Image (cartoon, rainbow, N blue to C red):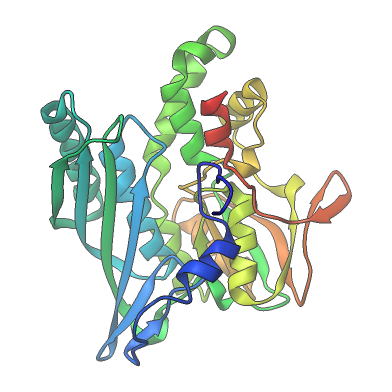
Length: 331
């Protein structure tokens, strides 16, 4: 029996031994197969491709429907695909499931409408063994076959760009779920600004802009934060990366909340930020900024070796064993 695992993503070695070796029949019309660091499948349909992804939302208690839609469609955006439809599964905890159902569907519909996406079905049930409602979204997008991007497309010498900043989603969740704990030290105004990070979760604008500007690969920042996402992108590409932690943008609200809670912003769940690998950083950055999204160069892909530099010192880049969100909420 494998020893107990921390809450969060299953480690890469277990995925390699128990998941990626057991994927059924391999089909020729699947253009992008399951693999570490790849969040989407790509399936051929003539000159176009269907892009599929699925995501659970387990960290947020408030705005569950909003996060479910935004996080799933972000995976599509990172592939250069346009979101089309969503299938939403809701597992409702016993207690007051009707209110939960109404709230989650209201938020999901608001998010889907904002993105121009239809919720086409799913599954809803009240189930035991959980203490709060959980949501799982399967999202479908479309793209031209020759324009689909993947996480594993980076090459040595490519610049690594990051949009917005570290810990966007985690900042909003912590400001909401720990408001009573944070307010005396940080004040209501800062927490209100931090909760509003919820509205920055989508990476569709920068995904469209970077893809049109010739991005080589993209990967949205989720659990494990910037550290985990950069590592996943390098592993998926089969190359190395040098991440300059001191150049990663950290917004003031994120910095204040993380400092108070003793958390590392670079290891905090970060939906709302997009990693972009590009051989032409000036062109990609200009396109993203023209879409109204801030962007910064935070590193470079290398032929080998995965390193993170902090304060002039380099150390191995390894994915966090536990997202900072889970560690803080458990403390």
